[in-house]
Length: 247
Ligand code: NAI
Image (cartoon, rainbow, N blue to C red):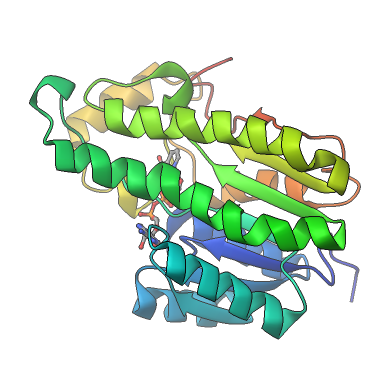
């Protein structure tokens, strides 16, 4: 068997039950990593673990500090530490800011931004202690360019990019590299609910003329987690985005 780029590594993938997170979990397993899928949707997390060959799965709401602390500690205990953290859990809704229910704003920030903070908060110290780690935060191109009726989501994703740069500055010298991926539109259950008209208009805007597929985003997450491929990326935001934005 040929050597995988992530042989011997343990990865925790939040939101790994579906879409981009699941595709990353699958790619990591193929590259030899032990993967634990953590997701709010416990049955789908179990299905995804079985389908991808992940080593384990956990029910986790990333907005719950005590749960994040407990799950990260349990995974670290069971596997001798967490080497790679992928923050892919996320939600997307649409509402014009001037009509937005403040609860929708808070819920979006809680999952899409605070969830990333909490997972980093409880996983990165162990990485720093062991002198090696990779954190890959899934942001969005909307965090760079903004989007109509998406101020809550775009604000959270811009926050993820700022968090990524700041944490990268804090921990790079201890061997922990923190980076983000800002995908363009990708065909997943998250975008399944949008109208055909919107999708057609969005596709026409894209230089590639089509949405991405989750398995076209996953290789960027493999690169960032790998040695030597990811060794020089610090606080970067990589953009597999069909050309939607060119920062
Ligand atoms: P998805 O809906 O297929 O997967 C998201 C996963 O996150 C689901 O399994 C869901 O159960 C889980 N999740 C939601 N809230 C959670 C919570 N509080 N705790 C734990 N798990 C939770 O969506 P997709 O498209 O795969 O999204 C993955 C990430 O990629 C998200 O952060 C999303 O914002 C981002 N993204 C998606 C794009 C797209 O066009 N699909 C484009 C750019 C970024």
